[in-house]
Length: 222
Image (cartoon, rainbow, N blue to C red; front, top):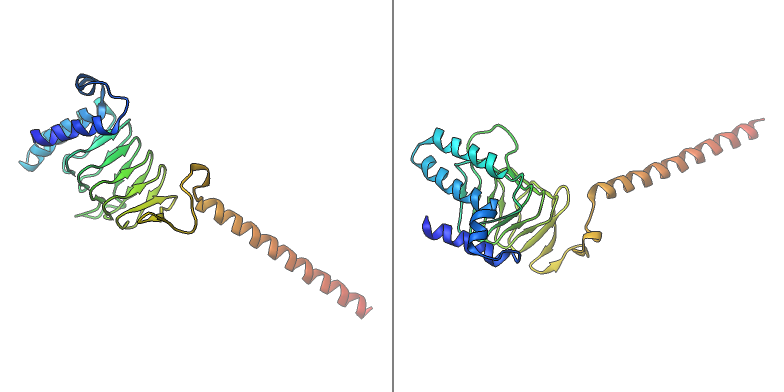
C-alpha cells in the first residue's frame, strides 16, 4: 500500500503543472486526501469491516466532496484533479495511471446485483462532468471528453465525446472528419433537432402541394 500511495503522489507531480512541493500536495490536494482515505477504507472493506469502511467513505465525502465506495478497486498512480462531485460506485474497477476531473461519475444503471459499475483499464483520462454508466469496459489509452455520457464499451486508443458518447478518434485517426477543437465537437441533440426541422419543412411543402392540387381540381370541376 505504501508503494501505491507513493505512486499516487508522483502522479500529482507528473500531471499537475501547478504543484510546487510535496507539502502542498499533502495539505492542499483533496484528490490525494480522497484516495488515501479510500485505500484505508478499501483495506477494511476487504477484511469485512463493512460498516467502518462505509463510515470512513462518508467522512471522505464530507471532507473532500469526493464519494468513493470502499468496495471500488483502484490501481496505482490514480490522479483526481479538482475532484469535487466525483462519484465512484461499489463495483467500479480502475487500472493504473487513470485521471479523473471534477464531476465525473462511474455509476450504475439500475438495481441489479453483481457487477454494475464500469471497469477502466490503464491510462484512461475522463474529462469534467462526464458520466460512465453500467458494467461496461473502457479499454487502455482512452480519452473521454467533458460532459460526455458513455453507455457502451470503448475500445483501446479511442477518444469519446457527446451524449450519448460516440468514438471520434480511433488509433490516432479521426472518424467522420470530426475535429477535437471544442467549438467543433459533435452535438447529437442539435443534429437531431435539425433533422426534425428539415422533416417538418418537407411535410409542410407536401401538404401545401396537396392543397393546391385540391383547389385546382375544384376549379376544373366548376
